[in-house]
Image 1 (cartoon, one colour):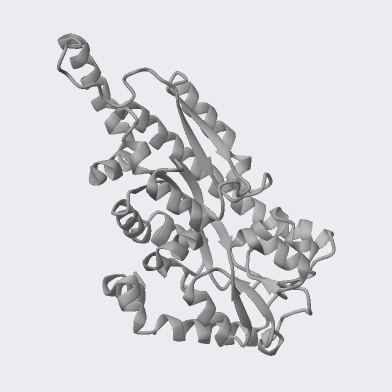
Image 2: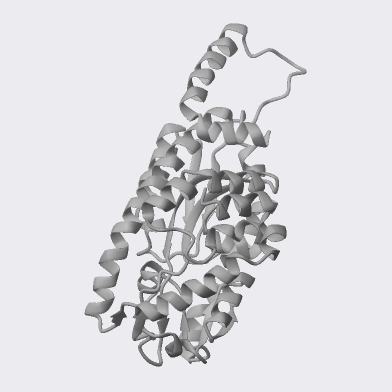
Length: 351
């Protein structure tokens, strides 16, 4: 079933033709009687899919979501309605992903950071300085073998991937002083995602990493219990972190993708025609989200600078130190066990 679901996602147009043939056959044969079991959603009831995310209204998750919602409703003749319930109303990314796995929440748009906090073996895409640029990201990750590995592993957990989008290249903000040299990072208390690899990298840079969920971050920044955080322009601007963090260094040490997922339990309640519609429209949504996100990155950096934030380019010395620590993490033999030797062999070979 899980294999078939992944095939639906990748071969949606082919499946539409198949559905037309099956529909014709169904009409020709007739509905049958008595002892036959009804298929998914044959009762004609409206299914509401509850869709969670932690994003604010200014985030690209939200700003391009309405065409997706409208298209699914229109193409299913109103039998499937998507309810976007963002801003963390269902909790943090880890909590929501657990809910999707159980079937308590239907859909989620989550960063790969959130996935790796729950499933550490999926965190290999966030190894420091893994990607050269967006072209490299697109080829090897979002449209490449890395996404395929993650999709297969999530399918084993009852989670279906509908499409890939983007979070951001990560930067570093703080409230103490500009960071341009390695020594500027020493001793700073920095919020990091709840992932061991992030903690190791920041420890290697001399900071005091403090793991916490992104939903806890605004309060920690306002109260000054941490000095800074590492998120890119998208989250830093759309969540308003720049109001408490006057300095931002464009370190771009880690890339973060994002993924639209649906519970397999929810998926199985849908007819095959509904599945096809959702798979096709989800691909369009994710493509739109990625395009908007990349445009927003440049725009948000300008807006934060206009609001008084100092945007700092890292020195060659800082980049060299950051990459050196990143390479130590990359070469850690423990990665073979955590992420899989097959995965790490491909990464180290530059595949």
